[in-house]
Length: 240
Image (tube, rainbow, N blue to C red; front, side, top):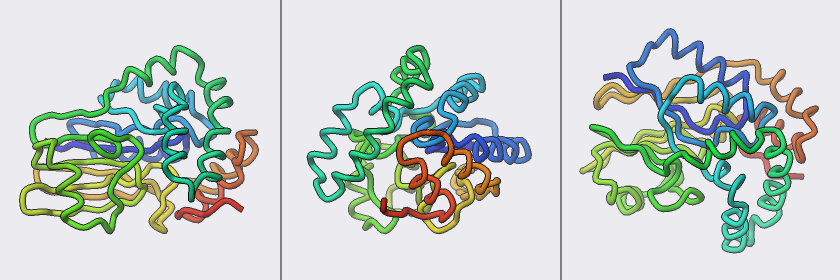
């Protein structure tokens, strides 16, 4: 069975539609999403509506959770004072995102589970018990084993860090899908995972990054210029 998993769409319509076109060519048997659907882009409501209409199973992400539970962001900020300013900027995007998506879409996001498991693999946004913290791409095998062994799955898939990779351990394979939007690995193309049994392929998809970045910059979203710079660079850019 061929399974496609995409994560971290972040309201990026052009990237998402490019991935949809690629999925039509690839024709997987199952498609799932790893959360972080709406916040951080110019089209949060549209992305939610498209994902819902497609009926894909999926999980909630941290920037989904912060929309109905801003205290989760506040708790993470309190525990990470070095990035307090960054998290304060993220918090400022919550009210306009809520205004865009409305109550009914918010309730749908809130209904997403924290984990999805089916035969052969488990999917979480970040970690089994934490939507905000996940191993980085350069994490040790020991950290990956400690973080994900409790899932009891031969394959664990997650998103969150915006850096795709595949790591085969003694007792499991850990895969990061990368992100549809706001890539952090230096490649600004959209990224998703195509899985066929034990075969793992990270697919990269071109889209019109410049047009999406311009639209985001003009969206009125707080700190949209900073987020647009990340789109254009294909890597994390600290706020100025």
